Image 1 (spheres, one colour):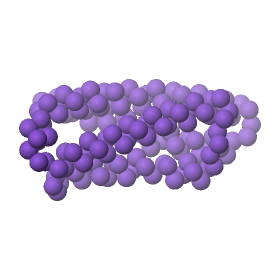
Image 2 (image 1 turned 90 degrees about the vertical axis):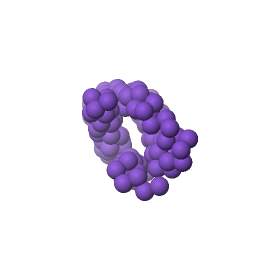
Image 3 (image 1 turned 30 degrees about the vertical axis):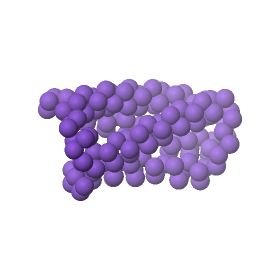
Image 4 (image 1 turned 180 degrees about the vertical axis):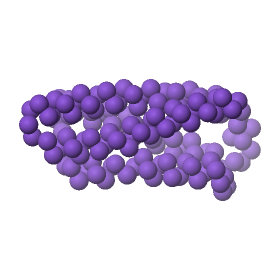
Length: 140
């Protein structure tokens, strides 16, 4: 079980690295105006999204495996686990939204400002703080 936890954490770190950096790339992409630079950002965003999707997939697969171990907690009133899973679901939704943004940038259809991307860059940090506190402290 410890090996599963270790690799789950490795995949989570990989996923979060992408969740933190991709919106920052969007900020820089908005600031760029030269055609070679724009193409470079499209390539970087696409490749980063692939890597972070591998991290997300590994996190989810191993998380489900670990969840089998915590199955009694799902019915035993362990609110911390329910809240953690809700935050993970929110991060999955954010991940999917980032895929949509990568696609929009690749088609030159970005409709958001640099400020918008600076704001959404904070979403994964809020999720991470909540998840770590819930898993380590188990306040509920």
